[in-house]
Image 1 (cartoon, one colour):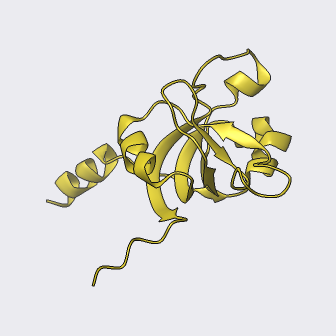
Image 2 (cartoon, rainbow, N blue to C red):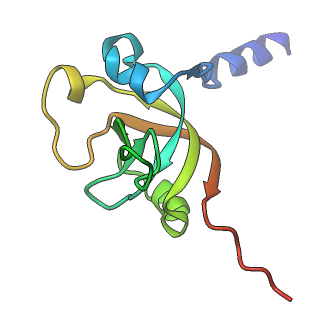
Length: 130
């Protein structure tokens, strides 16, 4: 029985603990974060089939949205954030530095592959019902 439990433990995927960081830190040193799961907090100001970014600030912020990272195609993520944009999000994602270090990528570059959506905050409060 112990042997079976050990075998099952080996088959279960071990999810690495995410590295809590910032968009600026990842952009400053992409090789350091390559292949790691990172936890990011930022704004999704727009998310379309060819462009979806997490940005440092809301698009309406003084100085603009700041630095960004591309979120790879993920229909479930898009469906979740679409009605709430612009929205503040926190998620864990696997970072791939290929598009920042080796080749130029077009459209929705897979720099971030969502692993877990941790939080979504709409900037517009819901209507009050009487």
